[in-house]
Image (cartoon, rainbow, N blue to C red; front, side, top):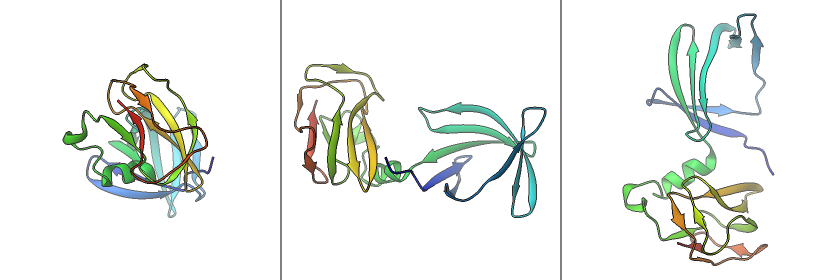
Length: 160
């Protein structure tokens, strides 16, 4: 699986910050459990308060000020741009390929009940493995792809 090179971090619901994950990070643990971060020759005190992997959210304290940081990967941004997060798509009837790729793993079976956020299948695209997850609680009616199958953007992968 190819590693993610960049993410976008929305800080306090306002500012988007591009983060290069390949850049070196000068982060050093301190005795009290916090960290010292040196960036652009300036030292910051950082404490991690909470991490929510499902929401992709990190709450931290930076020099005494609390910040809520929401992390978006390239795939998250693509899904948002395609409008798959809008209210109209809240109860989708089909799972479609967000980009061209190859099905490398199908994680569900027909007639299976799946909860929101559970993994449905893995699509390899742009040398990255992308886990396609259930947008809401659903029942799998039929699986329209096979292992190893190449698919185009918008191709129906699973009927709900």
